[in-house]
Amino acid sequence: MRRPLALLALLGGTAAAQTPTFSGSDTAFILLCSALVLLMTPGLAIFYGGLVRAGSVLNTMMMSFAAMGIASVAWVAVGYTLAFGPGGNALIGGLGHAGLGNMAGELTGTIPTPLFAVFQILFAVITLAVVSGSVVERMRFPAFVLFGTLWVLLIYAPLAHWVWSSDGWLFKLGLLDFAGGTVVEVASGVSGLVAALVLGPRLGFPRMVSVPHNVPLVLLGTGLLWFGWLGFNAGSALSAGQTAAYALLNTNTAAAAALLVWLLWDQLRGGKPTAIGAATGAVVGLVAITPACGFVTPGGALLIGAVASTVSWFLVANKHRLLPDDALDVFACHGTAGIVGTLLTGVLASPVINPAGTGLLAGNPAQVGKQLIGVLAAAALAGAGTFVLLKLTALITPLRLTQQQEVRGVDLSEHQEEGYQEAQSPLAAPVFVGND
Image (cartoon, rainbow, N blue to C red):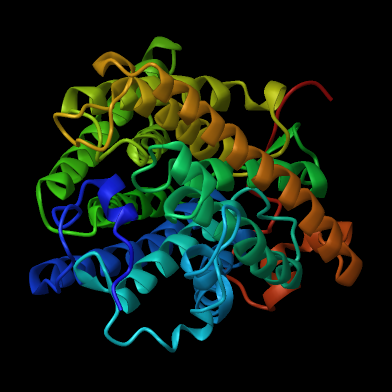
């Protein structure tokens, strides 16, 4: 059985205009990219783990590792077929691929469909892991597991269908989203923001600021994310060719530009260029280029990285005045940069890079409107869906720690373990700011 080539055509793969035949080189390429994407979630766990206080490091990292289990099992069971199953409609896929047991001999483009399914599993994994950054240090682990399972099946899978399936309404509209600006970044950022609002702030917020307990871990995690993100974006071409090459080049370019711009804003603000700032800027650039990487020139990637870094820097610098207690700035960095990157794709997409994408500057102003519709649709589904799923989860199990458990520390309260043999007191790291 041959799958429709609509997705590959949108992404500009080399096999898009011909009858699909198996390609060993493309298959090897996506096998490698899948391994790189898998590395991203442990990298995110290390990145997030370094950003929290010592008494929360295990729980924070455990949420990312739990996402690897939750999303993988849910995707194999029914998540993949809800997103890409044949016989679907504009809103949801058919159930023909439940359990992924009937794919023998089937191709997606030039690669085996089971490999495409694995690649997509790992996208779902990292997206759920990103959401966890908004709720660390106060959400109960059982509640996260239940919520995460529902989120993957009822928010992520339908949104992936809308954007990337040939039946999806945003796909038919003509939304350009190469590797997940809406599906991964806008969805995780808005979901994280809503989750932070529903759970409420950590004890003492905003007077008690939780400072990163291990900055070298943050830098290590950033390096692993950057490395894995090359496979995340380049692999979304689904073939080894020019589109994948541009996606890889643009991904690295945007991350580098965003890193430097973030450090520049730190310096202009009157402070010092910090390691946390460099790491955050790089991640913002990686996020922002994700929807655009296969459609824009390297010059466009520089602009996207710089603009996204500026907008996210402003939100992070003013987060205590503008945002709820989104613990690890998921909305400010992932949600906001995803919005910026998705909208700028509609401005900068060049048919010279990818014939499937023509933006405002190339004579197609209508593309900006399509990109805006995609952003609003993703935000609406993620925001409303997250609110409903958290309220449903709360009917089954409490969402957050008690005050006593939070003071004790989430690692001990939820896992009866500590990240370090002689860990500092869980509340020793925060610094009080403002007047008493």
